Image (cartoon, rainbow over all chains, first blue to last red; front, top):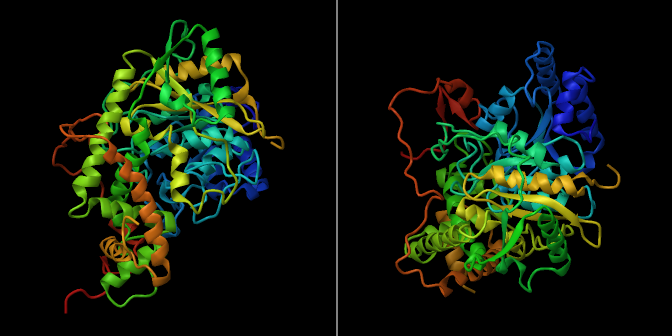
Amino acid sequence: MHNKSLRELALGLGNNDFSSVELTQYFLDRIEASKDINAFVTVDADTSLQQAAEADKILAAGKGQALTGIPLAHKDIFCTDGLRTSCGSRMLDNFIAPYDATVIQKFRQAGSVTLGKTNMDEFAMGSSNETSYYGRVLNPWDKNRVPGGSSGGSAAAVAAQLAPAATGTDTGGSIRQPASFCGLTGLKPSYGRVSRYGMIAFASSLDQAGPMTHSAEDAAIMLQTMSGFDERDSTSMDVSVPDFSADLGNDIQGMKIGMPVEFFNQDLDTGISSIVMDALGEYEKLGAELVEISLPNSHLSVPCYYVLAPAEASSNLSRFDGARYGYRTAEYDDLLDMYKNTRAEGFGEEVKRRIMIGTYALSAGYYDAYYLKAQKIRRLISDDFTRAFEQCDIIAGPTAPGTAFRFGEKSDDPVAMYLNDIYTISVNLAGLPGMSVPAGLDSQGLPVGLQLIGQYFDESKLLNAAYQYQQVTDWHMRCPEDV
Amino acid sequence: MSISNDDVEKIAHLARLAIKPDQLETYTRTLSEILDLVEQMNEVDTDGITAMAHPRDTALRLRADSVSETNQREKYMQLAPASKNGLFLVPKVLD
C-alpha cells in the first residue's frame, strides 16, 4: 500500500479493498519500524486511528472526497489542536497548540487523517534539518546524508514511504530543496494562495505552505485542499482557485520555457547541469520551446534574503518571552533576566544568529543601509521576473547547486549553508510559485531536482508541465533501495 | 570583521538574548561573515527604486470591528509557565 498514489489510495478506500483504519495502522507501523530516520517529532496513534474510524464512516456513507481516509504527515510548524506543535524548537517543546492552523483544518474537513508531525529545522531556519532540537533527520537515499531543509522530516517521511504525502513550508527553498534531495515533487505556491493562519511565522512576507509528494498528480490534489482565501490571514489573496487536477492533461506543445543564463553559468556543477539539460531535452520532445532569458539581479537574492528574512524573524520571534506559553528558564532574578535566559536557552544557535542579524539590520542607524536597501533589491529581483515572463510561460533550471551532502559538511559554516538556496530564494522574494521535480540521479545515485518557476497564481501551468514530464519519465517513481 | 564584540553584546541585549562570554568570539565571527555576504548589495545603485515590502504591493485588508473569536481564556491560560487568578505571572517590575 505504501507505493500507491493518492488517487489509487482513494480508489482502494472507495472499493473497500482496505479501510482507512487499516491504511492508517499500516503507515503507523512503517513509521514505528523506521524510527532511525527521525522523520517524525510527534505521533499520536490513538488520535490518528480515531480520525481514520470517522473517515471510514464517511466513506461507508458514500460521502468520501479525494482525501477522505488518507493519512498524511504535517510539518511541525502547523498548529494542531491538542497536539504538541514544537516548530523543531526547545522553546515550544511543551506547547500543545490550542487551535488548528487553517491548512490543518482544511485537511481535516477533507476527511484526511493526521499521521503525525514531522521534524524540521528549528523555526524553519536551515537547509539540512541539522538545527532541529529533536536531532537530525536521515536521508532515506543515503543515511549518512542530510534530507535537506527546513522541511526535511516531511521529505524523508514521503521518500521512505512512511506517509503517502506531506505538507511543508518554504521561505527560501524549504520545500523545493528537500524535495530535490529526497527525489520528490515539491511545490511552493504563490504568496497568498495558501493561508498562513496558524503556521508558525518565520518571515511573514516570504512564508508559504505547500505539498510534498511523489508526483505532480498527487501535488495537484494536495494543493486543491490547501488553497483558498482565508479572512484570518491578512495577506491571503481573494482569488479563485482553479481545478488543478483538471489542468494536468493540457497539451504543452508550444509552451515557452525560459532558461536563465545566470542559472547555467560556470558555477553550476556539471553533473547537475547535464541532468537538468536532459530534462529540458524531454520538454523539447514534448513540443515545448526553450528560450534563453536573463535574471540579471539573481546573484543578489541570497544577500537580500539574509537581511529581509532575519529582520522579519527577529520581529516575529520576539513573541517568545517565557511569559505566556512555551519554555521559561529556571534561572532569573528580574524580568529582563527572565527574557534573556529564556531566549538563550530556548533557541538554538542558528535561530539566535538570525535574530541577531535581523536585530542589527533593523536597529537605529542601520535600517536604511540594510533593510531598506534589501527591499529595493527585492524590487529589482521581482522586476527581472516580470520582464522574463514577457518571453516565456515558465522558467526552468536547477533546484539546488548540489545533491544531498553529508552530515556536518556545512553545519559550521552558515554562509556555505545559505548558498544552498541560491536558485530558490529569488522565487520567494518575488512571491512566485516554484516547484522541484525529480529529474535524475547523480553519479552517487542521489536525486537531482529540476526547478520550474511560474507566473503569479499560475500553479496550474507548473503542475501541468511537471505532470507531462512525469508521463514520459519515471524519476518520480524511483525510491531508495531498502524502501 | 564587520562588527566588534561590543556590537554583538549590544545587539544581543536589544534582542533579549543572554550570551556567555566564551561564545562572544564565535558570534562576532559568524555574524561578520554573514554581514560580509550581505555587503554585496552595495554593488548596485538603488537610487530611485521603490522599496518592496509585499510581493503583490497590496494594502492589508480591513475587517469590520466586530467580535469574531470565541473566548478561550482558560484553554490559553493552561499554556502559561506561571499563572494565578487568570493572570500571567512574571517577576515584579514595579515596586
